[in-house]
Image (tube, rainbow, N blue to C red; front, top):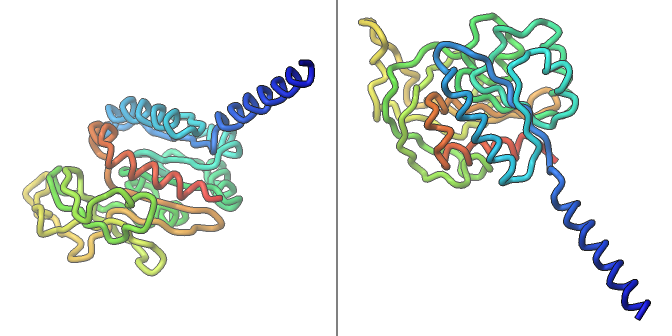
Length: 250
């Protein structure tokens, strides 16, 4: 009886240890946002969605709007997400922390307005992969999946109809970037700006999402995600989670 009890106790301890191990976070993600006129109402919706995503997929999640947390917290995280945050409010010390994070193999995920920085910062622009120029009025358009063999696009249809701000970019090095999504300029009015001056599109090849290896780490960017409703859209959220999964590395 004592032998049976001991075996039962050992099995129970082993089972509880297994549960505890399985319950541990797989990796850690820090979300960095900045309050602005255009995207402030997106932040609370996005934070809630990321919290739910972290619980569902079992990773550690934290959110900050303090640039100094890039210095204090980044060493503890595997992935940093810049959501509508750019280099405008980053000092040289913040940039040093971000560069160190990438060099140690960190993962960077940039969302929407992250490409829209007013300051000249070549290193950050290269990290994102391009520089925002302008965009037409928010419209529905057809997104083409150029590479379906990637975690951020595995789940998407070949043609994805959605409404968003279709960013135009400059300083894009197509040799370095691995393009995931493009937008079909024939499917929306790319000239429709916010004044009488018509805008110019980017032509037949208009990338809106890509990834790259960057200075020891991994970088992903998507121009999608302007409206709060995006962060309630399962396709979009899986697009971001796939990016996080890839960016964390192994």
